[in-house]
Image 1: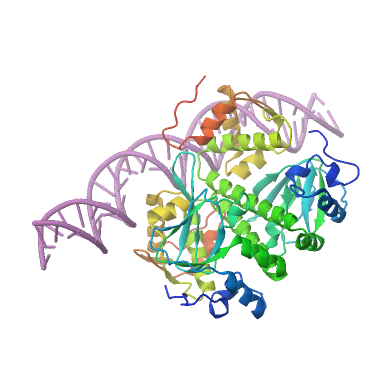
Image 2: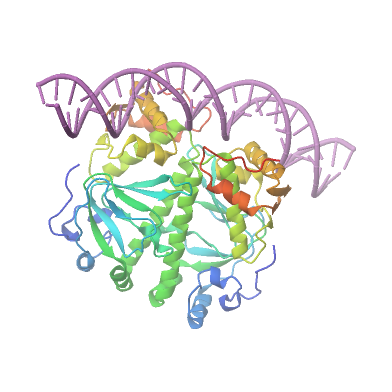
Amino acid sequence: MPEFNNHRISCPNCKLADLCLPHGLQPQEVAQLTGIIKNKLPLQTDQLLYLQGQTCESLYAIKSGSFRSFIATADGEEQTIGFYLPGELMGLDAFQHGRFNCSAMALETASVCELPLTQLNALCARIPSLQKQLMRTLGKEIASDHDKILLGHRPAKQRMATFLLTLSHRYAALGFSSTLFNLTMSRYDIANYLGLTIETVSRQLGLLGRQGIITVKQRGIMINNMQALQLIVNACPQACPPVAAV
Amino acid sequence: MPEFNNHRISCPNCKLADLCLPHGLQPQEVAQLTGIIKNKLPLQTDQLLYLQGQTCESLYAIKSGSFRSFIATADGEEQTIGFYLPGELMGLDAFQHGRFNCSAMALETASVCELPLTQLNALCARIPSLQKQLMRTLGKEIASDHDKILLGHRPAKQRMATFLLTLSHRYAALGFSSTLFNLTMSRYDIANYLGLTIETVSRQLGLLGRQGIITVKQRGIMINNMQALQLIVNACPQACPPVAAV
DNA sequence: CGCGGTGTTGATCACAATCAAGTGATGTGG
DNA sequence: CCACATCACTTGATTGTGATCAACACCGCG
């Protein structure tokens, strides 16, 4: 993945600005936002950005790399809740009690902008459009969570297709290829996220590959037939018309 | 369900105040909040409070009754996302684009407080603790959505038990009995919400009944063994220890 | 009454989990 | 540089949970 990482933290120079918190702000407001960003050392693979239960003192915007957020369930297992890509804001679920509701782990070398809450709140009070943008981001998080709830009630094939298509769209929004990308997470992570087993994930990927819709090479994914993928996503569970079997 | 409905809308006199937006506000601030509430006619069973796609001009706090929120899926089906009880705030998912992301329908006769967004925003700018409370509510919504995502990956028995236990806790928070309550939604709604079929819901309820953990009479639920229910909720999918079979 | 909506119960089937073995990449020490 | 271990993933065989299909019970209501 190309580097969005700037040596000096500065929203005005950041390619991600329009996807991130500065979206819709005046240049002078963006400058103020830049002012509160705390520098943070890059994280290595498998390093925790924060831990479930910790007091939340900052939100984190991803500059580069990707993260996995997960919750420890009652039975001691981990349940992956979501994956985060550059430009996305992490830690919003801590707004309820001031403590992180899930843990966040780097899937690869990654860097983030740290936004101390006290300063962010103060800034929000002075910049209405920043407040508004933060609320929009919260609304987006809720809407995306609703999609995940729906997804949980779908058959395996549809979950897999939706997962790939969503990633594709998010990469496209970042300016990357929508048809050729690498999965930064393991099959185990995907399975856990989708509520499937690794075997089922593997089989579904294999199936989509044999149908010619995608090409899988390790963690590399090429989407050959975006429309077919979309059809699988839209299909109602029953009455699934045969999708150009090969 | 008893009536929380006051003849004049007034947060200071509302028994729900501490569960709702006024929580943590100074009396004088609560008065200001009361000032922006628009009166709205009570809704009848199956009446829509808002429709997915509509421009969102207000948030709604439930005074009495209950609601079901649902999304129209790609295949034309409805998918129930959640149920709302008195004191809860509806419409938060509209923050993303200013349009409601789901529809809300009354499950019984219900009344709501309408909070026009423009006035609410203006008030938030002047009352930091109101702003904070709104953010907390958003965080709560996200956290509860995460729980729903987890639930989707659990076996039927656990989904059913969790559903009942969550309702029990919410009723208790409202000052109602935690062990004796009526379901305001149909089996169909429950099944749709949990991602199961009505048959499975019926069977799971029957099973819990035969185990003596609950007593089901139509839509009336009595919880006889809260701890057993909690054990089912906590249990890991496999290695489910036999729960006092009768 | 009989009817329609709502919910229950039973029989069968299918999808995905589980169990089990095997392949392929990557890394390590001899 | 190769033997070997390890990890990540794939593939195959079997099983079980919950969906589907189908019939039936219950309740309110005209």
